Length: 396
Length: 141
Image 1 (cartoon, rainbow over the protein chains, first blue to last red):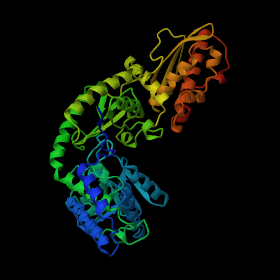
Image 2 (tube, one colour; image 1 turned 90 degrees about the vertical axis):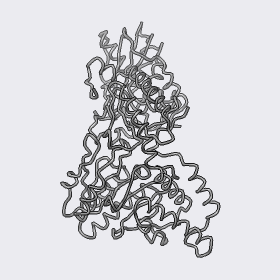
Image 3 (cartoon, helix red, strand yellow; image 1 turned 45 degrees about the horizontal axis):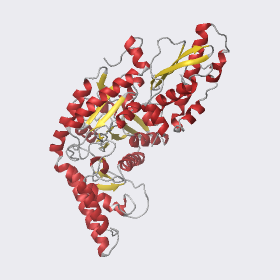
Image 4 (cartoon, each protein chain N blue to C red; image 1 turned 180 degrees about the vertical axis):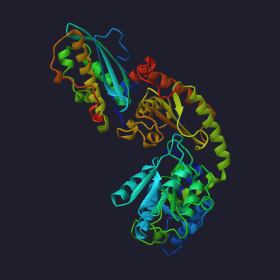
């Protein structure tokens, strides 16, 4: 048995999307910038995809630009807002401590270029407080960037409220919706969003393609020089099959949003319940305000990478925020941001479900994870110290 | 694949796993904050390590490195165990990824710490500088 429970990393492409793309690659090979019939056919297909994406987000087609993925969209959104800020004398940027590195590393670079960055706390439940945003706003704040839902602990942020606050204060509001798009209802107008990033492969679409929504009137700068594609805001021949696949995947996701969400929540809640029975374990992130498929646990006394390897051997594919899986010596910045001590953050496990998972799989996972945790605790000197009382339990 | 087959074999089927109640020397290195703690137990007779076992909190390569290190010193004279290098442990595992070499260092240090403990318990003199300070050097703690 192979159980794929790492849908926040990427998703399996849906058959329908593969078919749409294969047809596009075979038939619609023209360059949308070409004047001949093949080119114009590709331009029409591209326009159709733009309309579809815009419709799902509640945006206008002109407000959608296609990118190579979520990271590029995040980079462009933040750098654009910063460039605008520089022009009008606003050098303060606000974001949160647990953003994706595409946001955090861009902000760090901008700090080196003379911007001031405030990273808001995300509290123990992994939720940004609107009041914290309000308190951080300054006369010279150019941008607020808060992710729609966190990629590790799945917590969903008060986007509409933060958006309203930013709108009142004339500050650009960007949200990295890479984990939310195709999984949660998004309406950019109603939610007061100025810029939004999304990535196709997180909702059963292809890799290497994403989109940036930019509200009409919000300045956007091009960072890839070349042709006049995307109305001069992103040069390079459009990835037509990828874009068509993304639009198809997003339409499918939107059409089944409620149904899939309800099903995934049922699986998620059963898995949370099953894993909660493991002693000295805890769910990370708010219990209710979380993505329908996200389960993130810490198990005291063990290390996450060895747990992942054991689970893989038992057919379960998951991920962890331990240092050993990050390639650095520190565990995930997200787990540290919600206040977990290093030694506990090392023992984290993220299971992200999709509607392709089943209740049988959930039951199997809960059982196998309990067994693997018990085995690793049995060989762990840390667990021995915890049990003897030489080390204090952090998770009761 | 991140790890060699040897690493995966020692991770999945660790040799000499478990606590030793009547050990003559116990060495513990690393710290939980860094995500790795290794504990090696040795039994010594006439300067020969007659038995060895380990418990480890850590990633796959930490568990595999501990397992391999115990195999490499079992039945060997103490003098040979003290010559065990992290490089030798890593080589015996058919290599470790660069950012995991730290695990083989811990294995070498755990072996030395166990010998030091044996020396301390038995009043055997040694040069203090020959033994590490039980701290995970990479963590700077």
